[in-house]
Length: 250
Image (cartoon, rainbow, N blue to C red; front, side, top):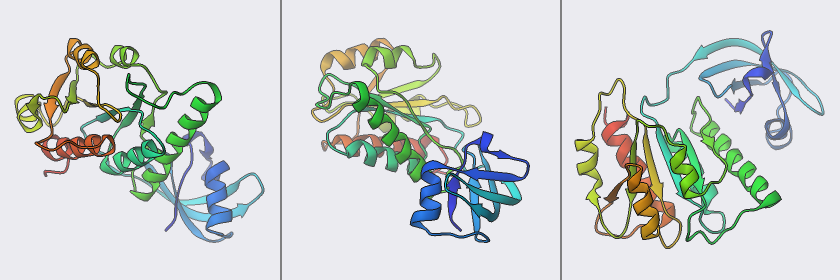
């Protein structure tokens, strides 16, 4: 059954209102009609099954027949701090990280980031990135939409991190094996510390950036003997963390 994201404030009185991109997908791409069954989810854990009641120019109304709250999310919060790469790699990274279970992505304007975002270009990129997260959440049956934060400089990112967390810094110039760190830094599964994974863009992180991250408790780690591309490193590290500390190893 087709799934659509609807903001919580658009679900009321036993009906859900589908608008904008989701309406386009429903009416123009899938060509659904009144009477067709669909699922809508609010990004907060609730899923609602129902039938399309009407389709208008600006919205479609879904009459809800049943609602369920699903626990599909890991108790472990994993956040990806991703150095902004070239071309459309960021959308790919966001899509795959969402499928893996990421709680949020923080785009990093790193020293070696070739792409420089300003003004309207920055706004449009951030909209596209959040849309990529929504689409991937729909496809992978996530019950929440991962947050894609505004692009930030390193100091701003580090200042915004919670005090209690684990900050991992995969770095091609050396560090402690990731497996070792995860087992030494373990915490109770019922209250796991959030994990932040800091990945550089093409060319990696500057030594000064790694040193700054260390001042905030960041731990340089290695992901093995081979050098991974920026679009691979964060996803590989996240998969390892989810297996070792999240809900994959159950």
